[in-house]
Length: 238
Length: 301
Ligand SMILES: Nc1ncnc2c1ncn2[C@@H]1O[C@H](COP(=O)(O)OP(=O)(O)O)[C@@H](O)[C@H]1O
Ligand SMILES: [Mg+2]
Image 1 (tube, rainbow over the protein chains, first blue to last red):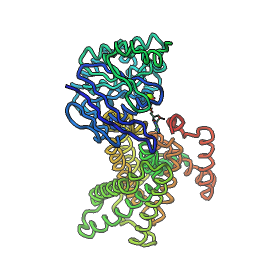
Image 2: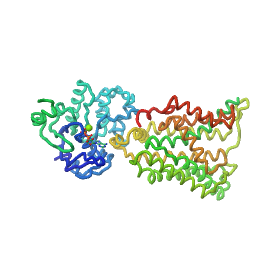
Image 3: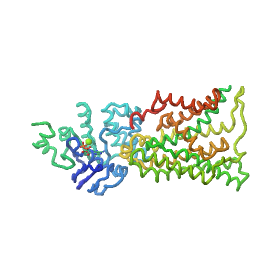
Image 4: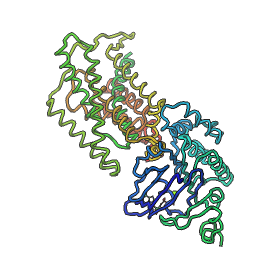
C-alpha cells in the first residue's frame, strides 16, 4: 500500500502557479527521489506535504488519511519529518536543544526521547561530540547531520530531505548518502529531493523528474539512469 | 555612601523597567513586532490593582497587607487575558500583512487602552490605599538607608526574573519559545504549535506587565493615565538597550537605565537625568546597534 499518495496537487505563491497538478506516490520502505532543475518545484512539493503551504487543489494521502489542510505541527505528529533546504538549524540553540526540538511531538516522554537520541548519535557520532555547542558554530557538514538527526528525533515513518548534499564537499556527500541508505535500512521511508541527480538515482529505488511544477517522467532509478532525456538534461552527458 | 544609596534606588527603578521591558522583548522575539500596547497593559495593572485593593479593603478592612496577594493574582490573570485577546484580535489577523500594519494596530490598541483608562478612571492622579506596604528603613552604615519596601520589591523582581530565565532556558516550552523566535516555519516542522507558543508569550509578557504595574503603583503610591506611555517608553528603551528580543538583555537594559537615571539625577541634576540617560543610550547604540546582548538582530531580520 502506498504510504504517501499525492493527486493533482496545485500550489500557488500569490499569482505564481508553482505546482500544476502534481501526482506522485511513495511506498512504505522505499527511497524515492525527486529531481529537477532549480525552480522546478521540488521544495514547494515538500513544503506543501509538510503543511507549510496550503495547496489550492488536490489530495495528499498519508497512511490512508487525507492530511491536506492540516496544520504543519499535526503532520509531524502523524509521522512525516522534513529536513528543509538550507538546513534551518536553530543557530543560538545548542546541538542538544536542536535535537530536543526535533522530539517536540514526543512531549515529556523522556525514555522515547533518549532512545531516539541514542539512535541519532549512533548514526552521527560527531553530533554527540558537539552536543553542547551552539548550532550556528557547526561546520556545513555537521549542520547537515544535525538537520537529518533532528528530523529523526520525532521517529518518523516518512523522512523528507531537501537537497542534503547542497554545498558539501564530495567526501561528505558520500557520507551523508551512506547514512540515508542506513536510515532507510532501519525502516524509515525516504523522499529525497536532489539536484545531484546521479547520486540520488544511485541511492533511490524510484524517481520522479519535475519540470515547472509537473512530473514529466518517472520510473525505477535504473530506468531513469538509462533514459536518454535524463542523461542529457540532468546527468550532464551529450 | 551617597553612591550606595543612589545605586539601591537606581536598582529598584531598574527592576521595574526590567519587568516591563521583558514584555516588549518577548513579544518582539516571537513576532518581530514592537508591541506598543504593552505599556498600557502595564498601566492597567496599576488601575486594576487600585480597584481590587479598594474593593477588598472595603469588604475586609482587617486584611491589611494581605489584601495585596489575592489582588496581584487577579490583576496578573486579567491583564494576561487581555494580552491574549489583543494578540488574537489585533495582531494574529495581520501576521502575514507585512511589518507596518501590525505596528499601527499595536499603536491603535495602545490608544484604546489609554482612552479607556482615562474615561473609566478619570484624568486625575490616583492614590493607592496607605498603610498596607512595609514602611521601615534599614541603615546600611554611613547615611545609606534601604527601605524594607525596596528590599521586598527587589526580591520579588529578581525572583520573577530568575524564574522566567530558568523557564526559558531549561523547559521544553521555553526552548520552543526561543526556537519560534528564530524561525516560525522551522519550528512548525519540529511539530511546535507556533500559535500556541505565541499565545503563551502573550500570557507571560502582559501578566508580568500587570504585576509590575501594581508593584510600581504600590511603590510610588500614586499615578495617572500617562503612566503607560511614559514608563512604558522607558522600559521599551531599556529593551532596545539590552538588545530587543533577548531576555537577559531586557533585564540588564532595565537595570542599567534605572541606575544611570538615578546617578545622573543625584550627581548632576534631576532636570538632566533624561538627557544623560538618552545620551548614554545613543552612545551604546552607536557602538552596539543591536544592543548590549543582542546579536540575533544582525543575523536575521
Ligand atoms: N516564496 C516564494 N514566493 C514566490 N515564488 C516562489 C517562492 N518560492 C518559490 N517560488 C517559485 O516557485 C517555483 C518553484 O520553486 P521551488 O519549489 O523552490 O523549486 P526547486 O526547489 O525545485 O528549486 C519557482 O518558480 C520559484 O520561483
Ligand atoms: Mg529547492
